[in-house]
Amino acid sequence: MKQTVVFDFDGVIHSYKSGWQGTTIIPDEPVEGIKEAIAKIREAGYEVVVVSTRCENYYGQMAITEYLKKHDIEVDKILKEKPPAIVYIDDRAICFDGNAGSLLEKIRKFQPWNKTDKNVTNFDRIKAMSIEEMAEFIKSMVDENETHEVGCYGCSFYGCHHSDPKYKGTGLYECEDCSNESVGLDLIKWLESEVE
Image: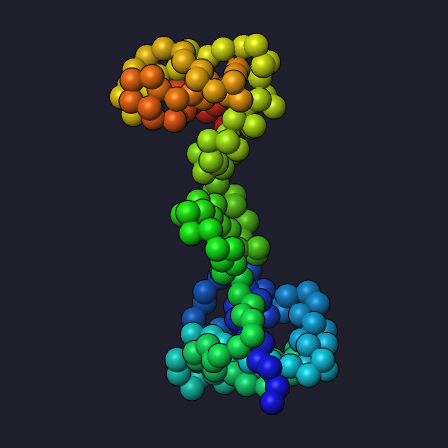
């Protein structure tokens, strides 16, 4: 019995650059190289199943069938729901690495490969960083002997307290009053002016 490989349709086969236009409207070209990749996977003995919510109705499923035929992409099945498989190929998936504590951060930072982030500013990217990533980023921008007057997000305590040497010169610290490891208020203002 063949092992099954499941492909999402939009964003994996259909490049989906135009976004959602309706169940039966599939306007964009296939992802570069996907036809050849699917052919190789099938030649290696795997069953290739395409899954899409477009298949909620007959017309959506027919639209996918016609799209695949038009672009000469051969698959084994087209389904609405994911069947059991050895792997799922999806542009909106986060591969779980066993670290449940990192999921929220990964969700916040997630961007599908085919989406441009024109509306995401550099400062938005910084706000999504962990404190360790932010410390490294700031260290790359400032003199390590420079200090910043900071105020705590947690309790608004004002003052500069670097309890950990790895944050030296970054304005990142653990507040002595509330132990909130955070980013100084003045530092946030400085970052906004530097990176916008």
